[in-house]
Structures are given as structure tokens and as C-alpha cells.
Amino acid sequence: MLLAAFTSSGINFDNGKTLILVVLLLSLFNLILKPVLILFALPFIIFTMGFGLWIINALLLLLVSELVSGFYVNSFPTALWGSFVVSMTSLISNIFLSKNVKIKRSSSRRFRQKNEGDDEIIDI
Image 1: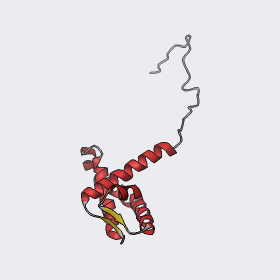
Image 2 (image 1 turned 120 degrees about the vertical axis):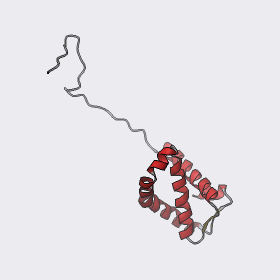
Image 3 (image 1 turned 180 degrees about the vertical axis):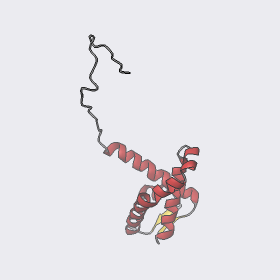
Image 4 (image 1 turned 45 degrees about the vertical axis):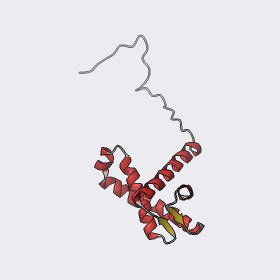
């Protein structure tokens, strides 16, 4: 959120405590409200090939700016920019901070490899 505020003249905050409150409230809205909004807007999200999620994020950012005094988002295009910056920052941090997870599949009798002498049997 700090990077979004520094890269846009339309996103302003009064102090660090306000910014922490904004981040906490936005996280809470992403946890509770965003899944409900995605459910109702699913046809729109599919039709726009995912860009509807960007709009939902911008609307949540505007909602937070209305609820928190000391945090200001001037317009909807500014909220779109802010949601883009927050999304890209989250994506980049997830790439660098997540560990590669490897799934090892254990072998079982049911999925064993076929030998040359095995014949296929089909039960009817």
C-alpha cells in the first residue's frame, strides 16, 4: 500500500498508523467481502477474463478510503492504479518468498508399470 501511495498522487495518507489500519482493513475485506463479491460477479469475471477481479480490488480500496479517516483515494482510476500496484507487489513477493513444493507420488500395486510379459485383461 505504501508503494501505491508513493507512485500515485491520488492516494494519500496522514501517518503510518493510518496506513497500518488501511492494510488491516483491506486484508479483512479481502478475506470476508471479496469471496462474496466474486461469487456474485462470477459471470462478469469470466466474461472479462479475470479483469473483473481488478475492478473488485479497486472498489474495495475505495471502500476502505471511505471508512478510514486520514486515507484518501481521489478517483476510481486512481483506485485501479492502486489495486494494480498492490497486486503486482503481492505477486512478486509471493514468487520470491514462497518455497517450491514438490509432490512425490508413491507407487502402488494398482498403478504399477507394465512388464513385457503382462497381458492386458479386460473383464466384461
